Length: 137
Image (cartoon, rainbow, N blue to C red; front, side, top):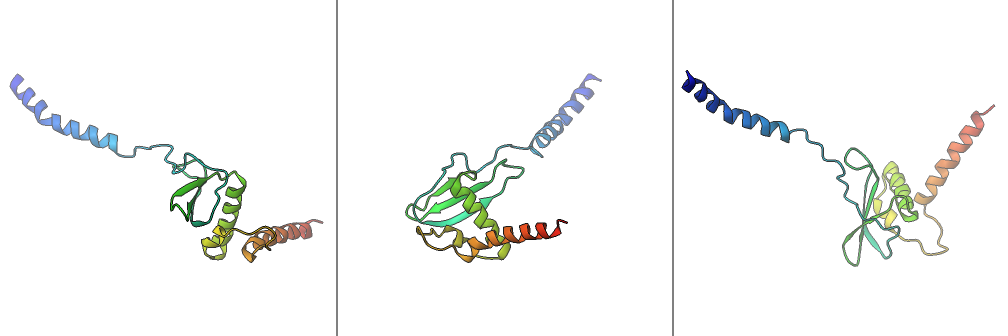
């Protein structure tokens, strides 16, 4: 009788091990999978690429990654800094209007007039404000 029980236990042991292994691997949530841990407030020099990832399940902050032309290295820009805010604003406008994201990377020289993309955000704000003022009695 003891030999029958021990044979059954030995036969089911691999099945239990398999169930424990599969149960641990499935659906495991790993918090804090942000690409940017070290951010810079500004990045100087010409930029060649821009990638924006909005906060979500895997990361609790927006991530802005630019590639510096000279070094071809990706650099994370702080989304709360002035350059980060400008890049996020430009990114949203270009995506909404179906424009190329490279427009956001072009640096304006001091005193140079703003482009249509940069002005369109101001125009949208003005239109919303005017619409709200007209709807007020």
